[in-house]
Picture 1 (tube, rainbow, N blue to C red):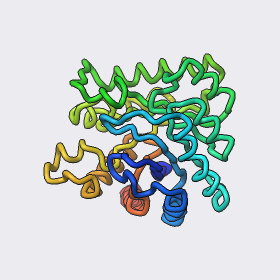
Picture 2 (picture 1 turned 45 degrees about the horizontal axis):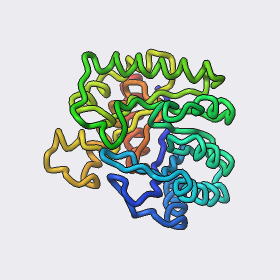
Picture 3 (picture 1 turned 90 degrees about the vertical axis):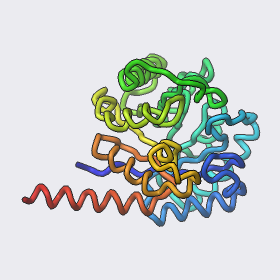
Amino acid sequence: MSRPQVMGIVNVTPDSFSDGGRLASVEAAVAHGLRLVEQGVDILDIGGESTRPGAEPVAEAEEIARVVPVIEGLRAHWAGPISIDTMKPAVARAAVAAGATMWNDVTALAFAPDSPATAAELGCEVVLMHMRGEPRTMQADPQYGDVVAEVADWLVARADAAMAAGVARGRIWLDPGIGFGKTAAHNLALTAQLERLAATGFPVLYGASRKRTIQSVDPTATDPADRLGGSLALALAAARAGASILRVHDVRETVQALAVQAAVMAAADRN
């Protein structure tokens, strides 16, 4: 089994759930991204608008002003893949012009009527994520029959819409949206059965780093910074189930965990 790529999170926001405000300056965000490169990251994901539960929207111009200088700063030192985490087509367009190569959209190109056409025009990789509702309301009693089937069916439909607009199938990734309009039980079910999403034939991005689902298992983990063990456990479970990208805060620890998992599996294959 080839190991998933590791996507490192660089939030240029004052209100993200885990590290809001810590990287508010361009210099701090660029420095953090370059530290993640040193730690073995494969992709950097730059976000200028928090999508935590209850988050308020950010104006388009403000979001562009936050992310474009960071992308340009990183591009001056690193040639690897950079993702823009945004739902707004104009922000994606500005980010790609600055050097981003992937559009990571929590609305699966449903935020604006021209989102699918913009993705096709940009020709970049596109991550389609499942979210029920929108950040301000998504955790208001989310209910599903079969959460895995419903998420997979919805994401495949969004992939079909993207391809109908001209996005190449080989550029589409699916993300089940752990923590986005789902209870802890839904999140654990999606993780345990992630291979059902991988079976759609699209590569899967999985992101559960430091999320509240971990607190549902360990009630003492009220601070997101205290959820490293749970984050690694979920990342390894997703890797075994076929995730192709793991979106994480703790790059060095995740790279190490994946290396040890691979070594154990290789030893098992030899015996």
